Length: 401
Image 1 (tube, rainbow, N blue to C red):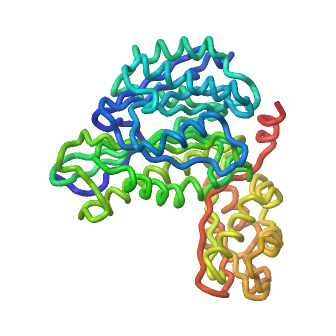
Image 2 (cartoon, rainbow, N blue to C red):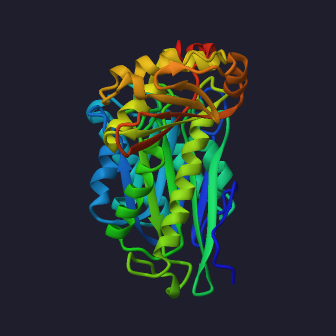
Image 3 (cartoon, one colour):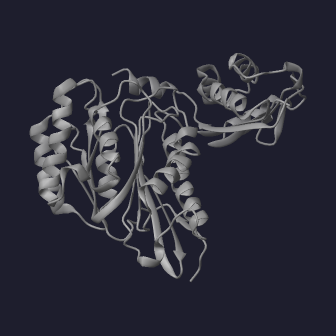
């Protein structure tokens, strides 16, 4: 069989996984607002969470459960973050886990809980209970799209990706779903993401693999520089592909598993940027030639988070001076007279001074739905990349309520 990675913009659940989504009444709009992901057998689990010191009750629950290294299900609600809700919020999270466990006849400790939505409001537990009771009836290996709909908040687009490959002629699938559109900043973003594989992987190896993939994807994106209280990425590996698909870092096919996971997480991350609140563009910011990778990262994030820069992109204006001044205060070492800047292949700045390239040519690049802003500092070998979008009036309209 072909051993190449086959990636697709579809949600194909790995063997032994089921999903469901429905409207429980949390959202007044009538849109789906609850989802359930289930492994038919106990799965190994890994997780990465927000670094915000203010974090939601379900984040605490998931962090505690991660120590056991095992999971059977993830129950998710949207429309209410269950954050800043005190002891009641913790009790509600525990009840969500217990009720889901009872429906599935699994231990409550094997149920992970995630919430997303408005901060500071108690969960409408009467509706949540009804949703948990109904969800198992809708579980299906083809229920991924319903689950995606159940986790979305201000998202306009579904976010999913699947990669398949073979291990000793055994098909292996890595798939993922995500939500997120605003309050997006690395470490991580106001997002939820759930990755699944039917390979068999021990929890410590799975955790290391997920951290690696997240650092190259979800921790490389920004929409508005804000960090959420609920950010969670969970990954389950249930081993249902078969005995030959038992993977570990010394296995010859481990690099291909890592490539598959990195592709899934990066595609999901890019979809979050592309669906940024009010956004129409996805911009790749690359900084190279910095004194260190950390310096390159500081400069790239400063560019990607500057509202002056992002509004100029919204207007398709080639105001490269904003790039220069932003890098100057970023904390990275900058030698003004050595900086070069490109928009795609057009060089706008050479040795800190504007080039003769026509402004109209630069603005045609910036008007595109995707382009790359590249800055070379000519100091060292440090590099970094961040994915971002522009800021528009629509972003303000979405967030004034």
